[in-house]
Picture 1 (spheres, rainbow, N blue to C red):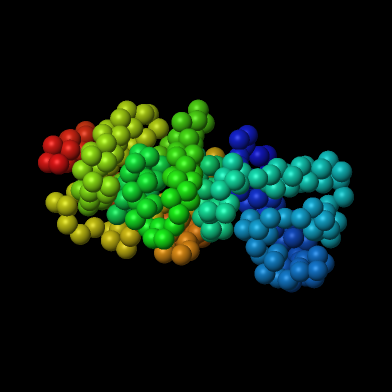
Picture 2: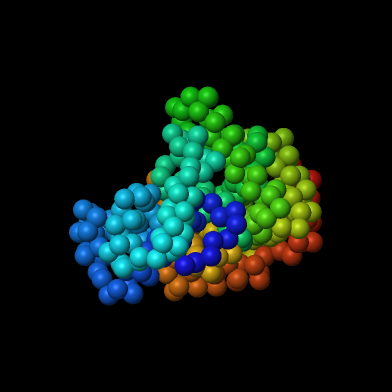
Amino acid sequence: MTQVQPGSGPTALRILLGSQLRRLREAKGLSREEAGHLIRGSESKISRMELGRVGLRERDVADLLTFYGVEAEGVRLAVMDLLLRANEPGWWHRFNDLLPSWFQTYVGLEEAASRIRTYEVQFVPGLLQTREYARAVITAGSAGVAPEEIARRVDLRMERQRVLEQADGPFFWAVIDEAALRRPIGGTEVMRAQLERLLDLMRQPNITIQVMPFSFGGHSAEGGAFSVLRFNDNELPDVVYVEQLASALYLDKREDVDRYSEVMERLCAVSTTPGETNDILRRIIKDD
């Protein structure tokens, strides 16, 4: 069975468990429909379980192991232990009333990633935002929402940023369109503080920031913002995250990941170097 990397979050563990169950099923030459019938479910339920997109019940996993011919006690215990850890609530559990299910998955993957590369068009990436900037962004997109809920949404964003402070946190590489840096979110003072925060963050060895300047003109990522996440565990494929207005796409097919990765490489090649990023940030601050 797969050796689990220490510190993997519940979302990553659920994906690992699902992939193990898929391999066991395929090794026995069984279809998803046959497996679903055994646990009083459907083919689509088995598919969601194997993709790690739903929680897994102890009874279902135990029944599947039996059906797949897994009798060795040590192997069964290892799988069931993985199940227990995959079902533990993540730190974001207390924000579940604020988080749509499609974004809960991203927060879990963000926690488990070893590298996050992101391209942003409209805003400074959430992991790099100051509290005041985050409040302005969230307020603008939350018409009619009570101030108390907005405050909790800001708290959630600040909690997410702690992943970059951990000793084993991910390497974070952001390409930000110049338009996002010149849009005065929250007013001049809030924006100036945000730009100065970016200058400070660039001193951290695990954070790289590049700017896609106006002067370059058209480029390969005009379709919009996206992120590419990579994980230490070889069993976890790279994932491309594309957020939409009320949902998100999670792409892990090799051809999709390769396409977005190539676009990210081209963006990095034509965007500012770290030294040029410092220059452009200081220039924007001065212009304000």
